[in-house]
Length: 232
Image (cartoon, rainbow, N blue to C red):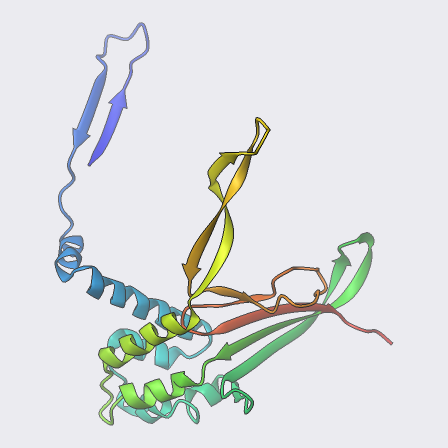
């Protein structure tokens, strides 16, 4: 339902008007409604996983999640992910925890945050870590003919959501409450459950940020660190 109102100027001969209209039902939205919230939710989570994989450089794996199939020439590349696309994208296995890691770093000359007149050499490092279970997922979900089992994808995503779900207290600016003994308001705190969590908050980086990265719902960790580069 949408509505609109028109108020003419005081000397106008036009009449004021208010109109409400019920837009025509979108066929795609109607079909999504027929699927039900569970199937729509599962589809949204698969798209989210595919976008994450694409961001990490695993484009073939991302397409497999969305399309439900793998091109014949790419079957082994995706099905044997450890030797295939993970290695191609530059990830290496961490033998300590079985996850796959890739770090990208570059140096830049920045203005020092506490001394605007001084420049400083900074190394920026982006570390991406993928849970080892993703390798087992594609080995199981992709068959020898290139078909991808959406049920296996959905089960893996659900397990990751449960595994990574955490409780934390957040300040919510939308829940304004009066501060005790004061006329002003303060942000209320509330407990939320989320499969997203902050990581790497121990120790200060170059810009003194309290949190260096996130672990997202799929278990992928993205860590960004900026450190002053020692010069000789």
